[in-house]
Image 1: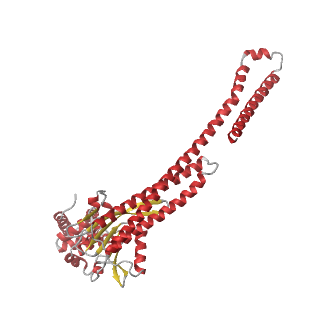
Image 2: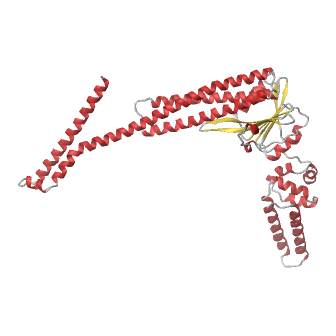
Image 3: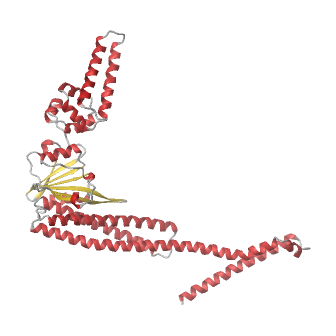
Length: 435
C-alpha cells in the first residue's frame, strides 16, 4: 500500500515527539538511548522510502510542509536523488537543493541541429541543454520515465516506453493525431554474433522535429549519425532523417542476408561431402536452425519497414524527392523478399539433406547388426546342438578338449564363411549398380 502525505507527515511528527520525550527525560546513558531511538526512526523511514517509486516520493515531497520535506529529503539515498528531482516541482526543488538541476544519468539523449547542410550533434545533459536550440532530430536512448516526461513536456508531447507498445494493430503502430503528430512504431534488426533480435523503436514527427525513442543502441542509428555529420546535404529536414533510418535498416538487413549466404555456403559444402558423422550432423543442424531464425527475423523486420514506408506515403506528407526515396526503399525491400524466400528453400534443402545423412548412418548401423545376426545364426544353431546330450554321445571316446575345440573351430569357420559370402554379394550389387 502506497504511503500518503498525511501518513508520512504523521510518522515524522510522531518520531519528533518521541525523540523530544527521550531527550527531556533523565536516565542512565541517555545519549546512547537517544541514538538508538533515532536510528530506529530513520530505519523505519528509509524502509518506507525504499518501497516507493521516484514519482511517489516526488509527490510526497511536494505535498509535505517545507520542514517535513527537508527532513524526508535527508533520508533519501544519494543514488535515488537525481531520479526523484525530475519528479519534484521547480519551486520545491529550489527549497530542497537550491540551484541543483537534475541531469540525464545513464541515458543518452542527443539533439541534432542542421548547420550548413550537416547535422551537428549536441548531447543533452540537463534541462538547460534544450533551451535556445532548434533541432530537427532528438534521439532518446534508454531514457527513464521522468526524463521522457520532461523532454516531452518541453516540446508539448507525451512519450511512452517503446517496449510497452506491443499491439500489432496498424491503428496503434501507425497513426496521425489531431494536432498533426505522426506516430510510428517499428522494429529494427540487431544482429550480433550468436544473438539476433528485433528492437522496438518509437518515432514521432512533431512540428518539424523527429523524436526517436529506444532502449538499446543500434548500428543503424550509429551509421545515420556518421553519414549526416560528414555528408553535406544528406538530410534537409526531419522526414529525411526518418526515411534514411529506414533505408539504413534495409541495408543492414541486406548485409545480414549476405552473412547467411556465407554461412549456408560453408554448411552446404559439409552436407555435400561424402560422409558426415552424427556429431557433425548435429552441429550442422544447429547452424541451419540459427540461420533460419535470423532469416525469418529479417523477413519480419523488412515487412515491418515496408508497412511503415507505405503509411508515410499514404499520409501525403512527403515531398516529391522524399516520395522517390520512399519508393526506392520499397523496391529494395521487394528484392530482399525474393532473397529471403530463396534462403528459406535452401535452408529446407540443407535440413532435409542433413537429416538424410543421419538416416543413412542409422541404416548403416542397422545393416551391421543384421550382418552380425546372419553371421552368428548358424553358430547359434551349432551351439544349441553342442549343448544337447546327443553331442556327448557322438563324441564318446574322444577327449573333451579335442571334441569341443573341433566344435569351436568348425563354428568359427562357418561364421567366417558366412561373412565372406555376404561381403561378396554386397560387392556384386555395388558393381551391378555402377554398370
